Length: 215
Length: 322
Image (cartoon, rainbow over all chains, first blue to last red; front, side, top):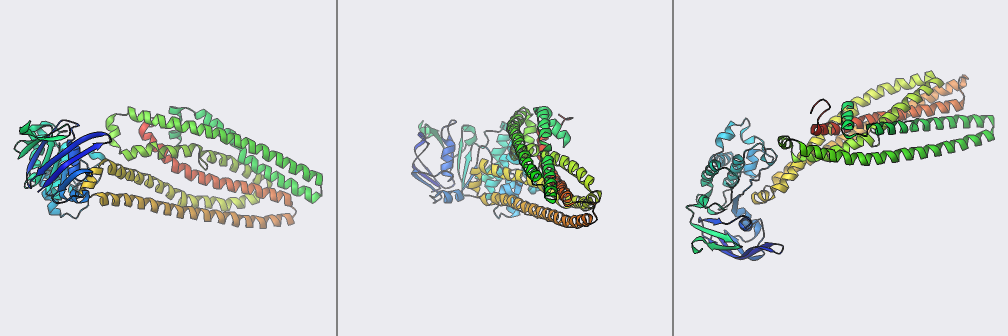
């Protein structure tokens, strides 16, 4: 089993965001989750990525139940890409010993190669604070390359194209294909067209998950 | 720096009050030195002449003069403190207002750490420059003190003044070269490193989720450590320079005193001076020396803190610029 959630509830203070959510995802299955803003999609992904601790219910990702263990099994591309004021290489490897070849593979897969090769310092070019010297698409591609380089069995996508224009968003979705190929994927979005062709589509509404067909 | 000072006062006002307070506080150190010198001369002369009434009158006069000076000095520093508190509030508000009115691309040009440094440590540096101890006020006070005490010292004995200057002038240049200039360079570098450290801290907060998910804690911590290590090295280097400065000061003070004392004794033997006048001369020499040291230390601090003033100009623009 890739991911198993059993009656997971979560809230901030008195406000309940997720209410007894259950979900079973097979290995290499691609799941799309639709939901409106503030519906708890990002919270669900934070629980699944081990960033939040499950206090009510049961969560298992690739056999791991503790947040530290879960985080090792998961790569995530978020709505706002977190880029550090370090080099492109360090943004991709995050300080882990990843070979030059693997870094270039990730750069190529994320469709960053042409741009990186055009930079005078290539992979060692510095990213400025908050990625101010990058376009939205470039920053998101760095986040994708980072996720590819991590090579985790589970990939979580939290509306990675929501802040981009249509053309860039389409190109980015193509760039994500190598990241999601052969992996267990959960992609949350409010745009159904971005998750067409997925194995299952679920809807998150008022803190509960439904199969789309059942609505 | 003068232009930067005029610029900040032109924009915030208070320049005239500041100059007025400086002028009012100016004579205190010099008057204190003169009171001491005159007291010692008169006291020793009264002792030599066996005039106990004269000695009593001198001591009473000394007490009253010191008390008045103490009151005056306290009042002046109090006024300075009020001025400082108001000025720093105005300066921060002004910087914040100016920042908000800047074109957005200009705000984006600088890192958050850069802006925070300008709003905090650069403002503190400017405040120190204008009102802090051993800064601009003391630079002015010591200039007056050196001028007046050296004039009186020279009037008492041109020979002793010449000897003192022969020691003091090379010392001043040596100190400038080995202490003041390197300290200034170190200070600028440390401010830049502090900015970088703030950027890493901010990224750690902003990208906390990415850092945890990808295990990048060690990488960012390592960068932050490298910056902190530089700051430690800066403090070490800075302390070494300060120690060199203090050693030179001690050498000048004690060595010069011995030399002048020997010369003074010769002059007393030759009947050119009495003991009271020699003691008075030493008081002026001390005033001159203390004034010089104060001037040098204040000058170093002024140069160091003016970096903050100049960096702030990047926000509100120079006098001729924006």
